Image (cartoon, rainbow, N blue to C red; front, top):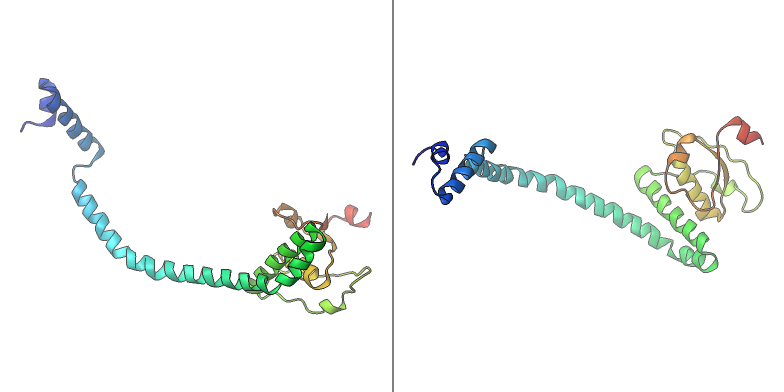
Length: 183
């Protein structure tokens, strides 16, 4: 058989012209050894499938365990959530989000608050807390207060907290600037 370029140059019939163009396209793209590439890909799939199963399966199991724990945490508080939704829908939404954040705090960080019983159920209280390494623990603190005391806080918050999406409904936050806090 003549070279692909020879058949195109000589202007043979249209069927051979299409085959000539296909051969030129194969050479140009580099698919001349397509079977070798496919065999190599089959080999890679054969090698990496057990590794993927070894690492991905435990990750899914871990994900399902954490989701199960979160579900059980919310289920444990379902009576409180039903009661909250019967009064005011925003209270129900606030309690639901607080329960989710409380579950996240308990599962991932083992977050606990000591001295929560010293906060009065009614009236003002001054709470000074150190947020530590992550400013998102304000959500954790507020979730505990909403769940156990049934009230929200007027808070001075870090600048980082204002950049987070999904603030809890009815939370009164002020940025931590001197001018805002004094007046």
